[in-house]
Image (cartoon, rainbow, N blue to C red; front, side):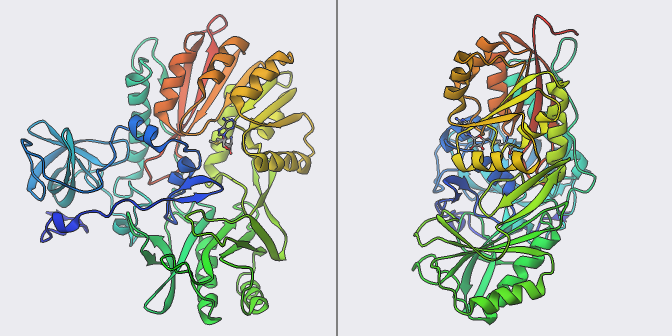
Length: 533
Ligand SMILES: C[S@@+](CC[C@H](N)C(=O)[O-])C[C@H]1O[C@@H](n2cnc3c(N)ncnc32)[C@H](O)[C@@H]1O
């Protein structure tokens, strides 16, 4: 009989009442998960403008803040029951039913029989903690991460990787069917391909963001325990690039040795708030960012010299000053303490400059897979006019520019557009034009100016495309639309609108965030009058 590491049978559920959710970290005004490992979530949070809307779109509803008993339910708070797990929620929790009442059981897998303790109840569903796996799924894997149970940055390490890919393909199909009304099996169905996974789905992240604090007089840094701001000290993350782990561990040790005061979030005292490390996966270049409450760092020169001495690949040491009492990681002021302001990396043949605060996809291997698929679906031959809506720092635009006559990119964040222009220059790419503003306003203006795209690529935030943009796409009638999405539910909703004029030919899920519940998709839409089966 397999026992899970979460076995806490003796505890009363009431005693385990979850703390109200802490505010999440925000970077550059975008919501962030407060965990070092959770950039899959960060990728979503980065683009998440309406968390309530996201919850409505998700299949697994948000937990209530405090558990409470409800009369008339087949289970009560604290009750221990055996339940057959029949599915996995889109967030990766096992889903079972007790007399028709749905229980979400994080850590349980479809096909398993699980002993669980109910720890939250609502009228139509509840949550339970996995106590024991009574009958184990053959797809169950041993999570290699020693802090898997406490961290929560990954939610699927206990599921064999091949099965994670199947699960993600199924999520996409479910959304297309339920929300989009598309058929996904049989003749005339939208083809949803098997998820493109990684041959080695570990150590893929190129960015670490580690909160620093103090416990029992010692400097600690690692990740926040679930639903709290208590820092669990740790030096190794299984999905983090080894260079990042090495750099974070070195900086923590040096800061402790040089008696640099760690930040105390409660009293808003101390100096070192976060250590952020970025690595160029292809170039090996490392950037260390010290986020501090004020500019003065005692023994700054010694700290910088020691970092350089210990980390031979470091090319940039940067300080960001954030004096605010806030969950936002970065402040407005950034100063370079040593070396370059940026590190460089490549996606395919394109070189990117990465600064302390600029956004860059966290899984470079899969980013290339995703962008190659985007390029393939765009079908560009060198003569096309292409619009890249929601272009960020111009990554997709620059990829597309290699095979197009001209690419127009639009993005709402001005700093990202500055990066996009710089990256175009860096690569000597001249057939691109970037404009700052909301895609739903800029693209109609381009239409008025007579820009006639053959292809429109959209890569919107989790909330999907603005209705006005979808309307403009239908009016501009490009031959192809390529929809890149990090949220299958809004993807399905928007494809339903575009299906008025377009045939959804195929959808390719790509695993950008192995071991998390997140899935990215690239979809090809072809205008009905030219779509050939
Ligand atoms: C999923 S990211 C895509 C970024 C880029 N394509 C990439 O691969 O790195 C979505 C981008 O849309 C931007 N954004 C959000 N709302 C927008 C809007 N209304 N108009 C234009 N851009 C927007 C965000 O700032 C973010 O950079």
